[in-house]
Amino acid sequence: MLQANIIVEVSDKDDAISVLFDLFDFFDSDNVEVVKVEQYWKENQLYKVLVNFNIEQVLTKEIADKFLSAIGNKWVWNHGGYEAHASSEVEGTKFKNQRVRFINIWFEDLQKT
Image 1: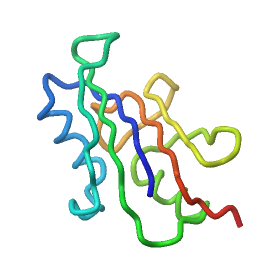
Image 2: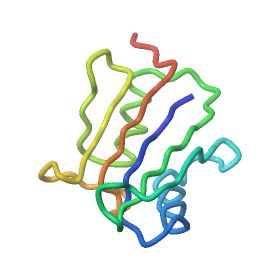
Image 3: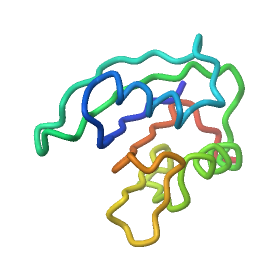
Image 4: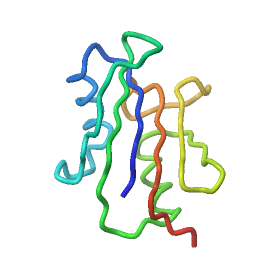
């Protein structure tokens, strides 16, 4: 499983869901569980989407990097190597969907070899 926390610039919850499925269009929707969609407290035009992805295959760092590069071009792996994030505030960052402002992805069972 992996979990994504995404901040998107949209007008409402439906638009936030639309961005989510555009961003992760390579996943079968049966394997996507939208946990929460709510307005982000900092700005009215931002929404926070929390989503779980059920993945059957073993995830290696190489597979995770390919997955991340399909979403955006600049990722930072957190200490421990199970979590990566990307932000539109970092110069040169480009996301597959330009309404994305921030993504944090946690890989539950990442194989580090």
